[in-house]
Structure formats: structure tokens, C-alpha cells
Image 1 (spheres, rainbow, N blue to C red):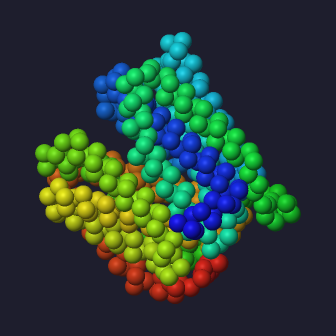
Image 2 (tube, one colour):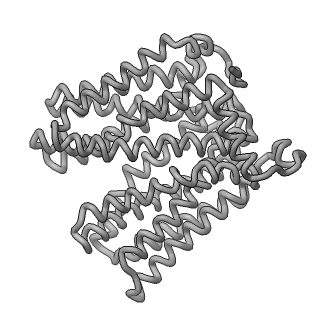
Image 3 (cartoon, helix red, strand yellow):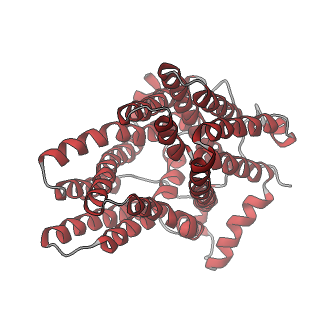
Length: 412
């Protein structure tokens, strides 16, 4: 607990963390409200699926380009502007609902625009964290920021349910808009140290910077391998939101059980995120990534094999804990090993690859589940992740790098 209190004394990190907490709660309330409104007004699962696609498409197609601007522009400006615009878009939706001048295309357009600014906001925040805290505090800082969306996932739906039951849906979108503006106010007072590239290097062309991001990844053996490794692991992981409800339905469990499963997964993620700092000094980030994906794979396969409800609760809790170790360690790994002037591009390219594969896996594995059933795909997905991790434990690039203090990636 002391390490969390210590980092909260860091004024600038606390402002970033506080702003993120407020906006994430608003975002989750907004997400539930959007799904409810579209489902209620159209009665179409396909229309809800289109909403989810709108949330991911910008990262895939705009992510690498956005990463160039994140590295070129003032990151504080990007963070604040992204929050302000996303907040104003939510308030615009409130106004359109109030005057009755909206349709499904209007809602999709607003969500798409907000997602575009998400693509700028997320790598900017991840690029800023290493400048606000000391390197030895990166695990703690990332565990705190990683726990915020999960806390929002626990609190947001409950708050949204109360609001939907007692108030007009416009209030939900207004709360989201105001939460973004409050977050921007917090961020206005953050002091972010500059780096040499931002102040000394002469500007290069946009395409040169874009190419430089891909070249940097390609020429650094360790970064290249782990981005590919993480991307491959994202294929089965992306299907989890599709497979979990399908598996439970096939076993005749209720929607209430699915709610418990989702909550327990989030609880495992939060607890592990808060506890990761205790072992981060004993195990290297790359080891936590590989072993974490191995643990997730084995736990998810067991989740599909052992269908007693309490066994499923146990294994899904382990899945959540393993996911926390993987996501936090992977973020810290990139923050430590990538040059600060290229962090925006590397994070954006990595997220674009991961989201593209996750979207494909949702479609392909979701279709396959209708044909061969979800149980075999759950077990197969877990087994794939476990085998991928066991292979990596024996790859030379991993053996050469483990247990070392990583500051630069070895070039090929």
C-alpha cells in the first residue's frame, strides 16, 4: 500500500490518474447507455455489433498515423484536446436527443469521432507516464492506470442501470460529456517534462516519421518479436467476449451467471493489478508477459473443460489476474525499451495490429462457434496461448533478454 500512497504524492501523476478515473467511469456509463438505447430502439443485435465495430475501426486504420502526430505534437495538448472534443461530442448527442433530430447514423458518427480521438489519447497517455514517474515506479503507475477501466467496468453498469431506471437516457450522455471536461481540467495542470527531440530536432516529413516507426520496430529484434508474440496471443483473447456468453448459454446457465463471471474476471484483474508491484522487482517484465499468457491459456482451457459453476468462477478469476500481469508488464516493457521520441508510434502500431487481429478473431471464431460449438473453441484458444508461451520460453531472443535490466532493444 505504501508504494501506491507514495506515487499518489506525485502531483502530476495524481492529476493524470484522477482525470482518467473520472472519464473512465463516465465512458462505461455511456457505453451501457448506448447499447441499451440501440437495442431498445432497433431490437437488432447486428446494430449493436456495428456500434462495437465503430469503437475499434479507428485504431486499426488511423492508429499508426495518429502515432506519428503523438510523437510530433505536444502530448499535453493532445490529451486535453482529445478529452474536450470527446466531451463536447457527448453533449452534442444530448442536444440532438433533446430536439429529436437524430438517427442511427448520427449515433454511429458521434461514436466513430470519439473513437478517433481515443486513438490519439491512449498512446499519448502511455507515452507520458514514463516522464511523470521514476523508472522503478513504472510498474506501480501502470498497475494503477490499468485498474481504472476495470473499476469502471464494475461500477459503471450498476450506475448506468440506476440512471436508466430513474432518469431519461440523456442524463447518461450528459454525465459522460461532463466527465471528459472534468478530466481535461485535471490535465490542464499537469507538468510534463519535454524531451530533446521535441525541442532540438528539425522537423521531418510526415511520411518519414511514419516509416521510421515501422523501421524502428523491424530493426529491434526484441521489440519486433514481442509485438508479434502479443499480437498472436490477441487472436484467441479477442474471442473471449464472444465465447464466454456462448459457452454459458450452451451449458444452460443464466444471464445472471454471465454477470457474475464478468464481475469475477474484473475482480481478478483489479486485485492482480494492485498486487503486481510486490513481485515486479523479482521478475523481469518479459518473463511476466510470457508466464502470464501461459497462465491465462491454461486457466481458460480449464474454464472450458471443468463446467461446474464454482470451478468456472475460480478459473475465470485466474484469467483476470493473468490478464492484469500481461497487460501491465507489456506496457512497462515498451515504456522502458522504446526510445521516448518513438513511443507514440510504437504504441499506436502495436494497438492497431492487436485490434485488427482481435476484430478478425471475433468474426471468425464467433462464426465457428455456431458450427462446432463454443466449448472446443474455449479449450483450443487456451491451449493455443499456452503452446505459444511454451515456444517463446525456448526462443533465443527471450533467453538472451530475460532477467536483464532493459533500456534499449538489441538491433538485428
